[in-house]
Every structure is written in C-alpha cells, then in structure tokens.
Image (cartoon, rainbow over all chains, first blue to last red; front, top):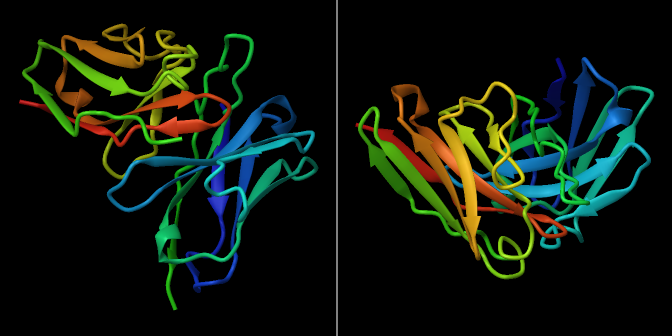
Length: 123
Length: 108
C-alpha cells in the first residue's frame, strides 16, 4: 500500500518561499508520476504540477513562474518550492500519485494522497 | 484554463439516483477522455472515484458511474447512501489539470 506524507513549515512570511517535501513509502518513487495539489480554505482543488522520477516536470500555467518541483530518488521524496508567496497561497497542500495522461489513459490519476499540510502565509 | 463548472449543491434521499454535472470547454472536457471524479469528506483528503470518464478503481462501489457528452461530464450515484454525503470534484486533463469548484452532496 502506497503512503504519502507531507512535511514542512506551517507558517511562511509574505514574499518568502514555501517549501514542502512529500515522502513516499510502500512503493518506489521511480514507478510513477507525482503531483502537488492545493486547496484554499473552503475552496476547490488546484493542481500545482507533477514530476517524474527522471526529473521531467509539468506545471500549472498560472503558477509556473513561481513553482519548482524536484525529486530525490535516493530518499523516495519529492519536493515543492513556491516563491514570492502571498496570503492567496494559504492552503492545504497535498501530494498525490499520478497526474500524467497520454495514449488514452490517465493511469488512475491521484489515486493515493497524503493527509495534507496546512500552510498559512502571514507576517 | 478556467475552472470547470459544477453545481454548488445537489441532494437526494437514500436509494435515489443523483447526478452531478461538470461543464468544461471544447479545449478540455470536450477534447479528451481524461475526466476524473473525486470524493472528499470533511477534513479528509480527496478519494479517486472515477477516471478516464467512466473507469472505476477497484474498491469503489459500482453505484458510482461516469459519462460524458460533448463538453459536459457527469457523475451518477445510483442508490445514494448516507455515507456518500461529501463534496465531489471533477477534474480534466488537457496538458495540465483543471478542476471544478466542487459540489456538495446532501443525503436527505
């Protein structure tokens, strides 16, 4: 059973960088694509981007200028950096498996999720 | 990409069928069969219920089904049960993912 766990600071100051790490257990990070998804309080889901173990990435066009997702296969982890944050970036941040679609198949997108990490942007 | 459009709420009595719509555009829902549905109970992470329009992951009850016509996808729960009360989100992939705003299902 694949399990994901987010970790990182729960409070970030405006204009600084939000950094989170997702640790994957129960399976190899080299077997899938991996995504970050966020949910502002009382709002819907917003996909941030995904990464493959090779380092190939795809980002939400609306966040692309501020986002970097990286992978550490030796630790079975992938990470999110979101730069120049504002209060609008306050949200629950989830890591999830999957996100790539092609050849008529989405390969069960986001079939495993972490429990989420609440990040508040405030001074 | 703009968010997909879902009704804010739907309701039904136990045993009834309930359908949640998800309207996109010819650039996303209308062009690709990459539509998925997620169930989210309060305070929990979302759960994949349907993917590739109509495919159901193992463990998801067969009362959940998905379909698509033109730019609109639908999730139908046939014989809704009390434990189905939750928020439901649709998502569509067209090079990047876009989600709907969510629909709150109330079981009366």
